[in-house]
Length: 179
Image 1 (cartoon, one colour):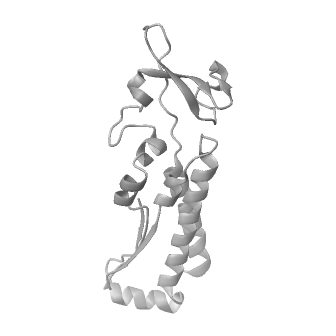
Image 2 (cartoon, rainbow, N blue to C red):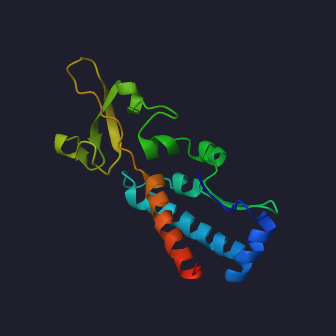
């Protein structure tokens, strides 16, 4: 999902790494620390933006940090798609509000059911799409005049983390590298 890769054109990667090592002691440790901060940020964003009161926390836990050092590249990745698909297969729907890999809005139950009762009371039009509690009773739509459930609202936790990382990354290198 989020991958930081250092590459420099014109210099061999080892030469570039040596130049950076002079400017920044232990660059791998610094990047690993940034990876930890990104992981913490994405988990915090998910926790603060969730729509349901309780929850399993599976989506938060499914995000992990992976570090790969090939000798010419040092990569810190946050969020392995295979792990996300196996531990929280709904991650894409929750972030984008769309079916996986498409532009079609995700409507729970394909629009056949509509919520009528939530943990905090009956469904009300004023809370449509903004409520924070879980539906505990749904009713199948029998007539076409009944309201069609709206698509779920996207959480956009990936976009929030990208934006945060861009700002953090710029500030970090602005302080360290005077060039």
